[in-house]
Image (cartoon, helix red, strand yellow):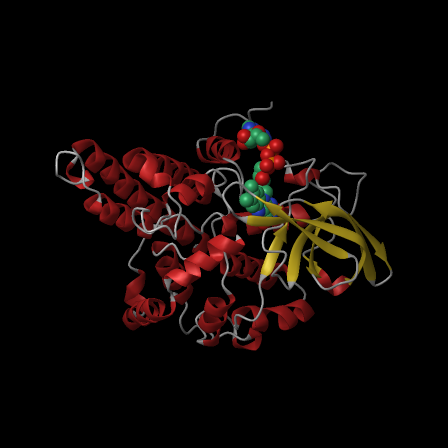
Length: 388
Ligand SMILES: Cc1cc2nc3c(=O)[nH]c(=O)nc-3n(C[C@H](O)[C@H](O)[C@H](O)COP(=O)(O)OP(=O)(O)OC[C@H]3O[C@@H](n4cnc5c(N)ncnc54)[C@H](O)[C@@H]3O)c2cc1C
């Protein structure tokens, strides 16, 4: 296992870091918080325009061939370390990787160059309100009609659907077989007649969406993978999803800065308090562990591992440690921690209350903590299935 990703291209991290220092301002964070959209088009387009999503991708799909294969790893590391919201990039690149593996040639040529150039984002349409964690219970129906498919149904929590060019949609194509069979994936253009998007606001200020599909007609070339093999395609997609996010170093540096600036009744600062230092130390250690688990899961995915265990370990630990960290920060700053960003009295950049509310969703989306524990127990530890 080699985590020394800078070896491949020592100048690239420096270029990314300099560029992000220039372009990312507090306005970007404020805009994302206000709109609830964890994606910024200016940033996304300018990173794509630099060719920074294209390293390691085949030239015929808009990539740069072998050149720069480790760039995306370094770029996402820099974004994650600074806590820069880039959900659009994460979702788009994971679907791009699945299309590369399982999409038709027509789909690859239509979608990959635009995704790699930062021109579009793609959202994920898996969850349905009746099914939740049981994604394979999807009822949204796709029925074949000659060269086309007609889709009817609805999805819940289709995050970024209001910005996306396509939705990567899980559908039921055969209701007469067991639920894990009979599923098929499609890449549906959001502008297709019959697609409707309605906002859903969460306690963490994130805007997600409910999406509705009424007699939506797509060509067979929009299919990703074989008919009725959607569960196999989903497995690849979920593995990629659980290797992103989670190592927000900005929150830690912000907390230390704020603790240093808050004066206590004894004339010292919060940072001098032993209990505060202990909590901040735990936060730092857990961020480091998250970073290592993330690198390990990315490494495993790059080696072709399909076990999903590494991704689940990272997702479980990073989500739960983020909840602990957000809770610790409110404890440390007390009522001051509840003051929202924008108010000069707020400690640090005023993210602590927002972070506390936002952290609640982390152990839910991308597969809940219980679901991750099941994967680790069954596939990693070889324990018997819980429902047998
Ligand atoms: C902010 C947000 C954004 C999201 N974005 C997207 C998106 O872009 N695309 C998308 O498709 N989905 C998205 N989701 C959906 C997310 O993946 C689901 O919420 C998640 O899978 C859990 O489903 P549920 O909320 O219906 O909870 P449920 O499945 O109803 O779970 C309720 C509780 O039961 C537990 N549970 C469920 N099944 C089991 C089991 N087998 N064993 C043990 N415990 C179990 C869960 O852990 C949880 O504690 C998003 C969700 C949120 C909150």
